[in-house]
Image 1: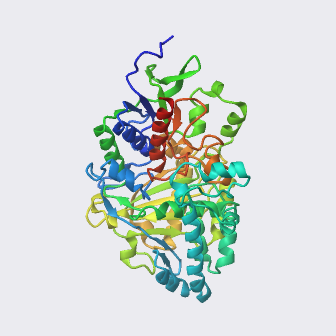
Image 2: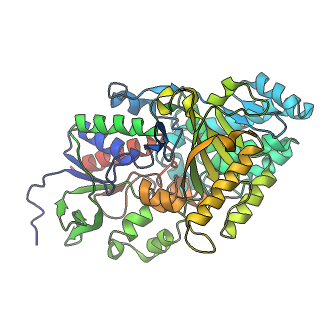
Image 3: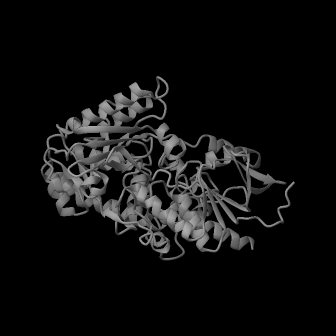
Length: 531
């Protein structure tokens, strides 16, 4: 039996060198902790990677846009000094229409209203009202979205209703009665009440459900929409594209972490947590090596950490049941294309091709795709999020040629007919190509090479548990003080010294740095309390 009173080589072991793991490790190292990061893959960065499709054509393999990035982390870690730059900032959304009457959602109310007027004068007048309503919701969630639930939520628990809390400081935002009722609602119903144009409803609903296996008509999806808006409100640079792709962001984070003193070990998969007389003692690797440290921070989600790494005996039965039922199966595939030249989209000025293009003509379109997903397959005309990063980042393609990156919604990790194979993958790529042809007739003929990553591929090669970029669905029972479970929303677990920092923690997934920052603060606060 090891004597835990003896000195350990490390103060903290971080499981996983994804974005949140690297942020947590770097911030803890800056606070003079001796930190080791162990990563199962042969590279750092997790879902932030840049890979080659064919010779001369590179693209962000998984996540293709990042942000809104936490400005304090970018500044504290001096990421610009370590090579982080942006080829595009404040990327806006273009809702594509097959007839070329697209809607540009660029934050300019007059511009958006003018786009909508082509479809509906009533919707042009309704847009500023709807935008103000969502901005009010986002403002009331803004402070809460940036910090782990507590404060107002703790008061709510004592007073009854979750959203009935009253803040004790001006910074702690409260929800008024109207907002509290609205957040529990369906974004599909909200949009049906506000607008008559299917295209605008489809675009807003798309942004609400992307990344989660949720119908746009599910209760609580307004909450998810407001949460996204709240996070974006904190970052003046908005959604960005790193120069060189998402892998360049991962590289800058790795350099910053190592400069702070973090030690990184790749190809080092953790098989289980180590305990000594009921106390956390460190981690064991697949190689058989034991690494001892009094604190472990996992960037895996709570289910994979607590149930997958041998901690079941340390947990109460109710929590084990909760974690076993946590929904963390990915529902988004990634298609990367190398193109012979820049494709032409009907009705779009080439300058708009540097933005984010959405293929989702209606809520009904999403509903049909979700129905196919629930049946274990994918829609023949999937909803898509498209970027053509080579328009603003020439380093990604040979001169005159381009790369296209697309997220494909509602793609099951496992098909009803079984595992993904070459035939089923080719069918999905063909469905994406046929859908793109409706908006860019020549695009499929320009394809020089294509890569497809299903949720199963993203889990295997990108390191995301379940292939889920949020680490778990964004439903009311998996958000806020219930993310990932009651009593665990502040990055702590029932096991003293064990913390969580991944996408499955508050507030959600995506590449924002917020989860990693909050986890580092929780570790430091815990160390202070135990000192």
